Amino acid sequence: MLTHALIGDEGRTIDLGWQDGSRSRFHAMWLRDNALDDKTRSAGNGQRLITILDIPANTRIGAASIKGGALEVSFVPEQKTVSFPAAWLSANAYDRDAGRQPGWTGEATVRWTKASMQNSVPRAGYVAASRDRAVLGQWLSAVKTYGFAMMEDLPTESGALCKVSDLFGYIRETNYGRWFEVRAEVNPNNLAYTNLGLQAHTDNPYRDPVPTLQILSCIENTVEGGESSVVDGFAVAAALQAENPEGFRLLSSCPARFEYAGSSGVRLQAKRPMIELGPDGELICIRFNNRSLAPTVDVPFSDMEAYYAAYRRFAELIEDTSFEVTFKLEAGQAFIVDNTRVMHARKAFSGTGKRWLQGCYADKDGLLSTLAAIEHGFKEVAE
Ligand code: NM2
Ligand code: OGA
Ligand code: ZN
Image 1 (spheres, rainbow, N blue to C red):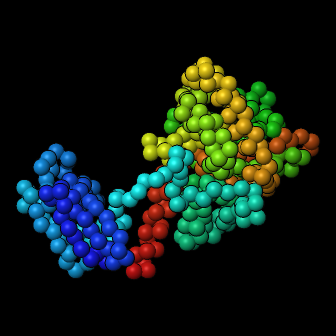
Image 2 (cartoon, protein in one colour; image 1 turned 90 degrees about the horizontal axis):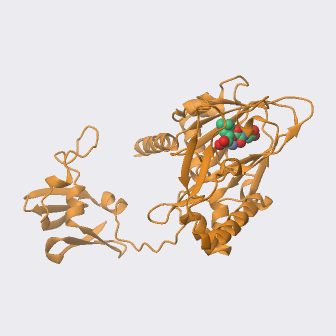
Image 3 (cartoon, rainbow, N blue to C red; image 1 turned 180 degrees about the vertical axis):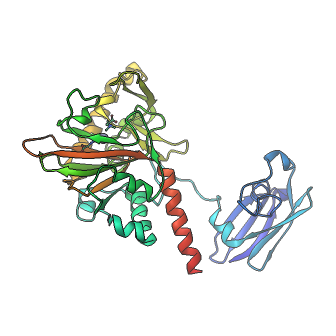
């Protein structure tokens, strides 16, 4: 509920008061650009019809009042009057203390460790998730929150992992194919296609943009060894930052180089930090993969020793079992990871039996879009 609206700074700003005593200021230019009327935005698809250049540079608020739970504003010199619902203003308020430390993440991200995750891994059955939007929504929401979830009861047939990505979006095709076989091969073009253990890693850091989701599904796993584990890279990065802020600063501000040139006709290269922060300091991506780290040449000579010490400490924390959730994939099970956040590993395997996994990449923006649409749909029904 809005209680007052005071025009300030000769109409350049407005100060809104709320029932709970809080205040939020807005700028005339911002309000005009974000007007919700059907001359400013298409009523059909919600897209903006005007450009910034259609708005006079000297735009001011000429008059403002609260009418029926909404703010009504008249802009000059356009002589245009529009209305902003209070709920919309509250949801889009930007007049708040930033106060965020580098490496911050939003409320939707919940970091985890073995202690909090091992016995509560989010999981859903494929049949239930494909029939029931509420089940699917919960599963997608877990991927958003934790960057990791399991799916069970998949058909144990080749290509079944595509059914998982079909639930929410689109496969990201790469030089490895739409999806790929993960099993021990003769002359493998990638160490994933051996029986070697793989240190916890994110996939394809040599690609830009990096694939944002990975699905690994199991068709058969009767070998000795071959267990999987996952590690929350955001939790580990926070631990590194807490004990060694300078190391965190080096890994997040100096680019690393990644490369893959394991098959003919392919030379993928990317220059990105191991810990990537957005322009406002938000932790946005972890890239960690010993197999495809190229020579690091973007760290000042005087910082290289400290950089390597930080890299080593980051690796030690990643291998610290208190961060690691472990399981052995069984036929018909799959897991999905947010490849910008959660690392995955496997133990070496040998002996009798067979291990046959399939993997694919998919796009997280599509997953989040499907989740938001499901949540929006439920909200509409509730209203
Ligand atoms: N595979 C499984 O990023 C990597 O190189 C890890 C990727 C070959 C598609 C393995
Ligand atoms: C991969 C990978 C793990 C496994 O294919 O990217 O890491 O369990 N595989 O085989
Ligand atoms: Zn991998």
